[in-house]
Structure formats: C-alpha cells, structure tokens
Image (cartoon, rainbow, N blue to C red; front, side, top):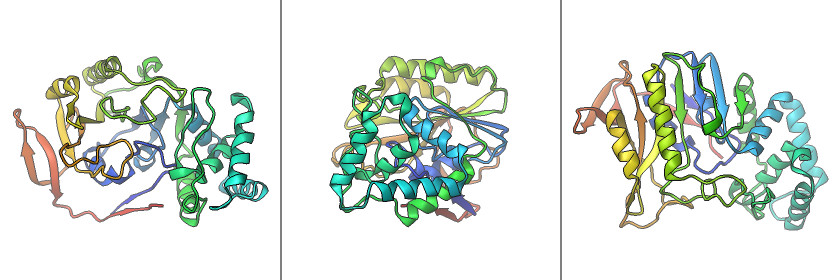
Length: 321
C-alpha cells in the first residue's frame, strides 16, 4: 500500500496529484535523494531514503520549512493559532487579511517571520505564493475559500514529521555543488517549464525567469550526473498550447521517456483549449528492474515510455485539502 503525504503549501507546479504515476518510476533503493527544485516538497517528503536534500530558489518557502524544523508540532500549531486570533483571520474578514499582509510587507525581508507568511498563504486566494519585484507578498484574499482548516492542520502535522531530517537550501541550480553525489544516488529535477507561463517562471515576481539557456545548462548537469552513475528523473512537458520544446525533445532521446497522464484543464497556466495537448513526461536515465509492466508502449529506441498498469495492484492513498 502506497500512502502519499501532501505539502501544507499549494505551490504552483506541485506534483502531489501525479505522485502515484511518477513515483512508480523512482529508484526502489537509494541512500541519497536530492530534490533540485523542491517547491512545496510534495515529492521529497514521500521518498523513503537515508538522506534527503531539498533545494529551491524561493528562499521564502525554504525559510518556512526551516522554521517548521525548529519548532515542535505543538509549538508550531500554537503560533499559528495565536496569529489567527490576534489578526482576527477568517474566510470573510478581508480587512483583517489586508492589514496582516501590510504588516508583513512593511518589514525588511530579513526581519520577516516565516510563520506569518505561512498563515498569510493559508488565507490567500488558492493558497498561493505570489510576490512582486519588491518581494512584497501580493496574493489577494481568498474570500469564502481559504483558511487554516482541519485538513490543512492535519497535512501540516504529517508534513512536520516528514521534514525533520531533510537538509534544506535555497540556491539557483547553477550555483549548487553536487560533487558529493555518488553512483546509485538519486536526483529529481522539476524545473520551471519553459513553454508554459506561470508566476514561478515569468521573471516578474522578484525571482529570475527560465530561458532556453537554463534548459540547456540543466541538461548538461544531468548528463554529467549520468556519466558519474547518479540516477536522475526529470519532469517537464514536451508540448503545450501547440508549442514544442525542441531542445528537450532532442536531448531526451538518449534516455527513457515515460508519459504522465494528467488533466491540466483546471490549472491557471495550462491551456484549456481542446485543440492543444499538453504532454507531461518523466525522463529517467535508468529503468527499474523490479517494476512489473502489464502494458507498455515503445518508442523508436524500444524503450518503455508509459506504464499503463502494474501487476502488483498497489492501493494508493492520498491526503488532500
């Protein structure tokens, strides 16, 4: 039985709903896992291994996780409940939310309280992280929709337990030294998707955007890891809104491509047009020998590209909002 835990953050581009698919292709045995673009950590908290590293360029998110680690779950919940009470936050009190957000943004970045940011997110529209170029949190109020509800509380309790031993960092992937990764270690990369448009990759939110040069540098990094015997899995899309990522399509030919079935119609950065198809893929430099495939499709190089159904009949449970 596979049980998947959910991040207490609704991070754009999160992979929680895809976990039953993509984790079927993850290595079964590895001592080290490195999540290069961790985001809300939906992926790495569901990996069972001795050592986990989680990195994301968004230091606001990473600071929240580091603050979580410093506190017991009782202390953390007490701080959250206290902030909700002091600022009179609920699903209808927009005025209190605006005041709380103004208070948070009035402080220098280095003096802001990560727990305050987390509570702000809990009462913001779609629970999303949005900042302007001045690093001011600018997500609007989530009227009648967003709150620190019982399911979020339970997700946070599960999440807090899972992140205790994770080592967090906040760097641009260009600046990370991965020399310590050895043969058999595993790196997962879920970068911004260049041919989609989201607040995480438009370069207008106080963080750098994502270009074709970033794609190429990431591909070079993964090639280097492959040459050292490090296993990797890369999430991305090959097509979106009629546009193709030709650099990705060409590069992936040397590896194994697994198609991921996911409906993006409700996503705010994917096409809702039936005339275009978004093709989500997971690219790996390995195949798991203990993965039993009942049905599969082959590409031109006779590689597995899509797992349709597993013989083991695993039951998969997910905790959601």
